[in-house]
Length: 70
Image (cartoon, rainbow, N blue to C red; front, side, top):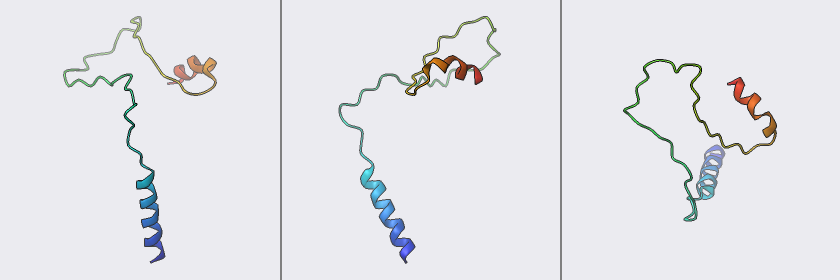
């Protein structure tokens, strides 16, 4: 009985804490999802692909090292 009550209180708290997106929210980029994309083969290693990565952490000086680990 106590477990059910605690679960209900946790669910109620999570629902109350879920705030909808404010009207001032701005979408900066949208992910491009296209069903027409088909993987044919690998890109040649000399081709440069522009990539933008938004980082919100410290140690930005190590960003290249972190990226090369992937």
